[in-house]
Image (cartoon, rainbow, N blue to C red; front, side, top):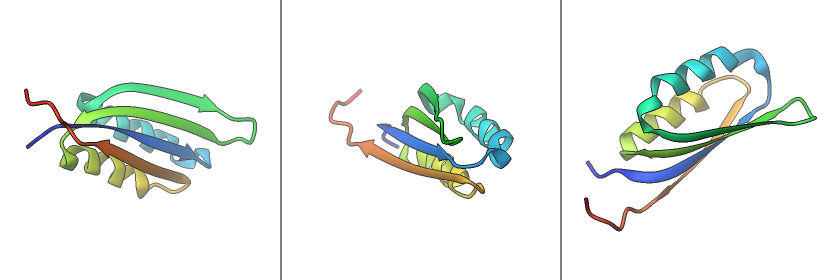
Length: 84
């Protein structure tokens, strides 16, 4: 299956699911190119992930994160125009 490049933006609204969030991200390490976390003065945090993987792999990651309480996630995937 074709790999795609994309990003996932995660809003952490409460800290109750932080351990589960980190476990899920760690489990999907093979598709994560970069990770940046930004704490906010509101008590929320924003995590940005740059990803490269199949749509199934990226969908698995974002789907698991989206089911966590206090977590919002949105992803954007780019079409791969180069052939390996």
